[in-house]
Image: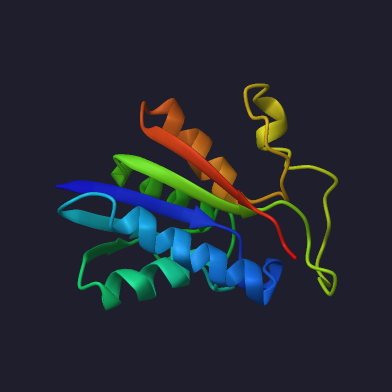
Length: 153
């Protein structure tokens, strides 16, 4: 049995083509090994977490979903605690990101991912994501970390 963590950007950071690419990648990751359990975070903004859950359910896989109770960083069971649980429960973790913002993106923009800026070994530039924080925490715990950067077109 292996637990694969899948985290990444919310739905509003993907163009339709990039979303389709992300879903195909999630399916490939989840079917790459036998006896897989998905661990993810049930993000309230949709995207990678929710798509991974939907695909795991479709594939009749086990899931270990770490949904936040409070939608704050430090809440009773907010994003920080949820993300640490994802890092801890995963044998390997995949962070799925977009390289750049979609043209119609209305949210806050960052020039770089400040989580990855602290890691000179990270060569792929991408939009900032809390999924990166989770991935780096998993790496600190000795877990296998993989980044997947998708270009919005």
